[in-house]
Image 1 (cartoon, rainbow, N blue to C red):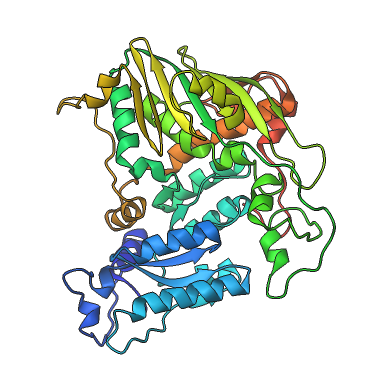
Image 2: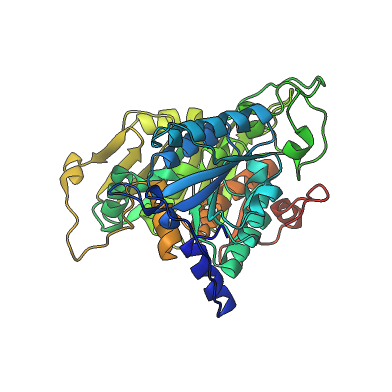
Length: 447
């Protein structure tokens, strides 16, 4: 039986009772050592999507002693074979004989998810596969790490949230900035009133790209193009369709960087403003879109979002934000600024900025608000899989931050103000805009 203690416990709890007996041959390596937990305590991982981002995540988990990667899945044969070889080479270095064979490769994620010995899956597919893959994984009893952004529609987001709640899924969202100290520091300073009353936020992210060949081309050997499309509409293969740019900037597969990159600074805005359980009630702004080529997501945008309590957020693409942000701090391509009645605090991956500058030396007292402390996003997932406790960025938070990207995109496409009820999670008084909250999926795929 290929059954870890953790999965046994999960099965027993789910079924209410159960007795499992098995005879095992225990090796010395299986018992672990000072740095490596014994085999039964390691979280077994499957990796779905091992392109650029998926490969980076895989390498991060390989360096965590509490995890063991046992399977990779990708519709590109070369990618899955290369990553499997990388996994086996990594583990072979710890073997006395220098040989390790224990990583399976899959083209179809459904075959990998049928395995009962995988505890959690790391999903780093193109955006249009994030929710369908996560739904299948949750229903198969796996815990999940899902790269940002979340769903192709808000209806997908809500369906995944309900499924995770029903199956007791431990969920980690790929907004890794929450596991970096200076982002938590910025949010704690704002939450504890160091800038006075928060009234405005500036949030910005890189804009989109135009272009992309529309000329049909032969599908490369070893690439399951139909499976790559999955729930997306059928379309002829082109040389630019399934590249990194194509996967991000074609609306059949993504919202573009308004979601794909905007999710990072938006997540920090929610964390620092203590609005993770609500959202803006109005969205109004402008955007531009390509008028030729394959790519059709927003090139730039400038959206004002208003909360019910008067808080306002300006969500911008980088070219729009540059003169706005450069007026008060050194400009970087993405970031989050909190502006209050007594100063401002701004944060990006390069550092932390403030006015007055001494705010950066303020310490948070023991009686003040302290936020979730995670030093490693992957390790936080592993810890929560074991403890069955919430991660630093749960599915509920992921849906709230992703909703801002979706509603901003709807507002600029509709060209008018969108009113949103963050309690009922519905667009008010606009049937045309409401229809943009969902879209059909290609058969046989469904939520």
